[in-house]
Length: 430
Image 1 (cartoon, one colour):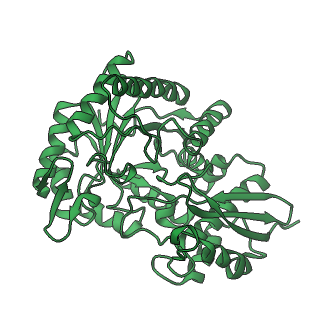
Image 2: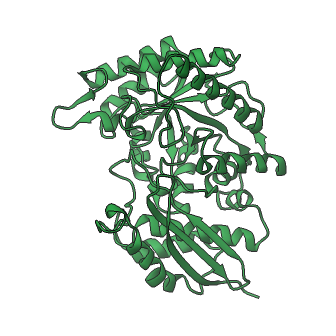
Image 3: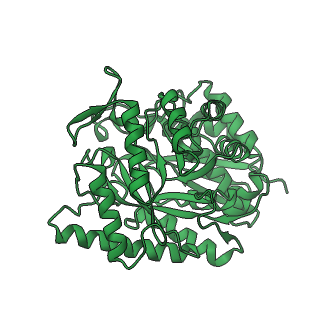
């Protein structure tokens, strides 16, 4: 019997910030159901695929997604009815063509991605395959790999009401030998950080991704706390635990003056100053990865930064690349960064996201599969990271069900699969 798509149903649900988002059910003619929900970002790049919201002040202060849901239940359901669910490229191509705009503005990338992921999950279930194995096939059949987690410990920027200028300070459990070991170690380190902040009379309130939000005035204070917490937990800084930083510099950039406004520090700095600051962090602390150190359009600065420190640390582009093949291609040509953050909703389809991962790997750029600050309990990205062998994953902190659903899925996959743990292989150069 030929299996086709029988029914598509979208609905409005709530994400981890209590804001509306899209969920999609896809049912196949063999009765298989695939369900997926779509995350939302706070710190967003201008080139991301478009998240369609209603702007109705009476419905969640304008954040409703009922128009996107109507699009799913109307013309998108119609165009998908009877389609081959195992032709992921064809499914995603139909949806992109139906939308007809460059950034998926008409139907909404949130609507399109929900359908794209739900179809993939339904197809995997229909073939009785774990999702990560099905994604492995879609990605070309490379080796499975369990990713090294990069775990949020301290938060500022748009994830914590600008409590700190720099958005996130993350721990990488460098000496871990498995996913379960990595999660256990970083949970211990996070608990030590919370204890230290409490002892010092500082805030331990949670930010959007479950990290702690102490409101340090400078990045150096936060980095020192990361080192102190590592030692308090019984680990060796730079050996057992290393540091990743997400600057989210686009949110600091003043387009009017061309400067970066460090509000907590009370100063404005140039692109060269930002580069010097990053160099100082790398020299003085066990920092092995820096994300979005400069504004999304500061291509000259990115090139200079990569020349200066790109042989020593991972320089990851998020707003710079927005999981977009064209922007990544420019970065490769101009030698900007050496890693790319992978966010499904920045791209808008599973096929497009897999293409960016393939392009990155082909050109020596490390892919880092990432969650968003507004998440759901959907664990799709855990399977995506394993199925593509990405090597790294950035989920958030080891708190809150929207984050833990992904960590728990990685633990399940580790138990079930024969995939090797990537460790630091995608992060370190030597």
